[in-house]
Image 1 (tube, one colour):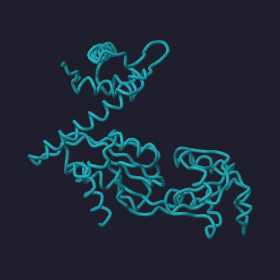
Image 2: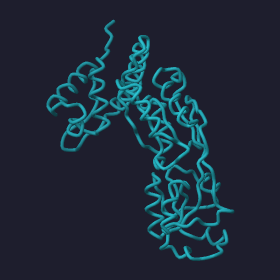
Image 3: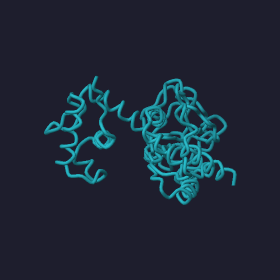
Image 4: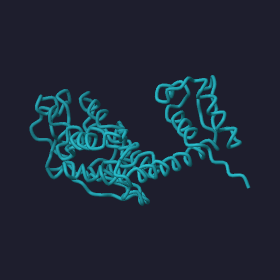
Length: 296
């Protein structure tokens, strides 16, 4: 019986093309011409015996079998990279790629010294290529589960099977309006008044999560804290922001916290890895580095 196992290079080219949604967009990362990429993709399709993607005037898209193949390719490449890192660690030499994901708007958070940890990690392991991805909580979990990320840091209200969650700290959020909102100069604001305001929520919040924060509905949704800040600064909406992220805007007189005694919550931040990968050398080293920076 003949076994069809494409070489890793073909799989990496394929996943890169899918990530960039086309040959031309993948050129720079692969350092290949579109004709060379097309040749490699044809080789891969010939090897597996199915059409994996449509390309042409209609744009790039995966076929149903291509979607399935892509998921398996990501899983296999993740296993291969994990083995390569393990083999390198046997001689004390950490190298390869480390793919880290993080929630947006964390750069101002003193409780998460991520930049300092990355600096230490990069100096101690110069042969490791770091990929940093900013995604929302749902995407971070899916990416770790699918081996597209080695580790992720964020606030995860709904947990997924197959992931291990290591608690880090709790991030304080308050309700804010901007200086162009009608409530900005009001001295005493009752909760029922706030409930009648146009509120911006998170696209990854369920109706239950929204209600937990004191609102029955939202009139706008965003995928990122920057998007949330923009809508609040517009003066048309009120919404929740991390205290550290909003602080500079509060100091400049552009934002004001609303009814902190009634509206506010803490988001529990965790570091997540796929179950079974916690002992991989790069995962262990970065976890140790981040913890050492947190305690210093």
